[in-house]
Length: 544
Image 1 (tube, rainbow, N blue to C red):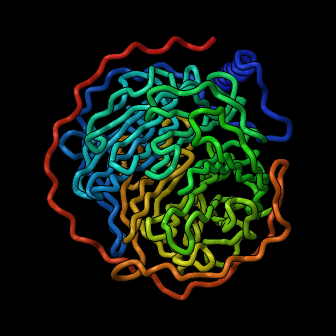
Image 2 (cartoon, rainbow, N blue to C red):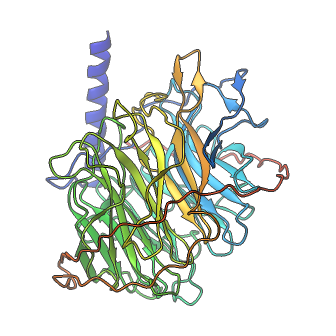
Image 3 (tube, rainbow, N blue to C red):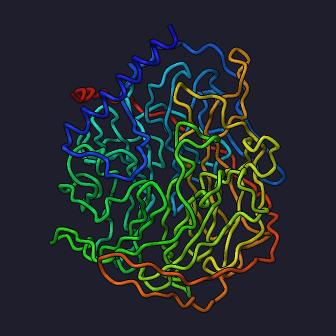
């Protein structure tokens, strides 16, 4: 019976891939790994009246405290659900207001997932989980962001037709309203978006989005909104069709996209005119970036997903490192089994990039996993990086969240610090054998706010731990964050040119000497807030 079911599921999966390729008129480019495709494979889980709860998890590791975010109305853990792939936003005008979006599974026995969200008004100590964007609508790949005034945005993918839409919150993530038409943000699998937050930029307030072009709602892999996400322009293609990456905007309004071919090729792609509402965006510069290895899909720590995607962030500090471009990815060194968190930077507007620098500082061991690596850049130019790390596990699987930072534009990095207890990433799977594809961090001048998934809560009826979403605050060594040290720019060779691609090989490698031992900051008492009023919306029709 088990083998016949597996065969049936395989047939359904292959048929869905073929139908998507036929519907979009596109197929995956030769040489690329198979996309870990989001797919509509289960009906909504039956309505469950949850009678079983347990105290919410507060997990402390030294001075770092992780608070569970996916809790019920009473602040308790919901036994039997699952939550992963969190994306965090912080109000830049009030750091007490934080929102996280995640993939919400009402029961681990079903792969049917929705767009869950939670918010805090006391800097992450107390979390409220009002529900999901739309009840019983199959959604995935949550991405949140904010503008400079503290308005939050939530990009969500409708799995059955690969179209996305934008939701907006003007009260710190407590309630969300559909900003674009349902599915009206175009989009596709593994989509990401950013907001131009520079008031002096021509494109101030514009939203830019890109996704995996050959698994999309319609043709193209990039779209732009000039009205805060309300409407989106017809998609266009990006050179090289990058995937599994992110994008950011420099202080001069130039847009940079970091992506790859799902293997060992990585690119930084620039558009200087995306900020001009009068023209269709074009991409005038492509630079090949050496990240020192290949992305991994299907690794032992996350069999059904990525070991990490590509994160690109731009420094807008106005200081010596202003408009530096940074890229981070968890990659497998050529010939290795595990992954390292690798970093590269550009000091010349993406024209050239430094040689890859290994952020995790443990002895090289190809069996260790340093995965889900991500970065945030603070307004003062400090770079924060967090990732899951199996260095301390005898089985090379159990992982802790680790942290490092740089105050000199990524030339040197502080010694790595574990900031969470160990957890088993292979437990709590809601049918789909993964704990998401990414975690996220937002940095400010004194530290970073992190959203990550872990399996700290134990479910006795299942006999294993559950996937939940956690918030933790990380910060550098005691007291205020040091001012970034002015540095000499590396001398890259060769020089990249406008399209076609170019490769830079400059090296910038050093060892930081400060040992970070962050201290906890007192948090104010939360003010209880009411939940949102449910908004009924029709489900989109299924894709052929």
